Amino acid sequence: MVQIKWTRQAKLDMKNIFDYISNDSVKYAQRQIEGIIKNTSFIKNNTRIGRIVPELNNPQIREIIVNKYRVIYYLKDVTRVDLLTIHHSAKEFPDFLIE
Image (cartoon, rainbow, N blue to C red):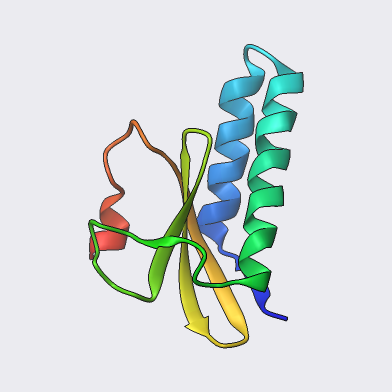
């Protein structure tokens, strides 16, 4: 089975998502975080489940959509996937991924 590594950026994104949503509802913030975690677990069984990120057009960088969030990940090798960022789809694409 594939190991999923949460990068520092992905962890920070999750914290920011929780903090932002919890201003209105802690319960909904918890549900959102749980939904993202649950959906990332599907990557373990099929690393190519996500689509290629159109802005990057790199077959090794893919994304799954969870509600309004793009969970962007990198296929490091056959045993490991790195979660790069969890990005709200309404926001501008993160520059650090383009560089």
